[in-house]
Image (tube, rainbow, N blue to C red; front, side):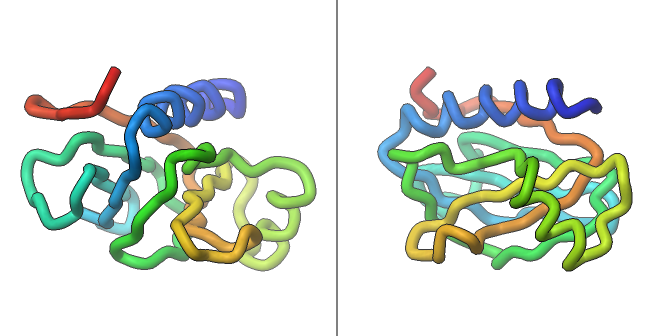
Length: 132
């Protein structure tokens, strides 16, 4: 996945999430390669989740298991430039990976949930209540 494709997916996810009053997320699955993050209007409502965000060929992650997100600002970003450089040098991220950052509520602006991966995707499971 190239940077433009990754940015397009991030933009689509943000467009969906920013129509919601808030969003709660949880790490549902990580097998060393594939990371599944599920989001919904309540992390206590276990199934079905409202959105499933997947990261493929994961290089590294730094995030809590559960977090809440304020959707009045874009909750997910593809990091580039100085922001990406700072993380790349800290974690020695291998070239070809993209850096993604979720913005949890009540975290400092330069912090967040960081994921280095080659690809990103999402799906809305059957029963999703996301406003489209």
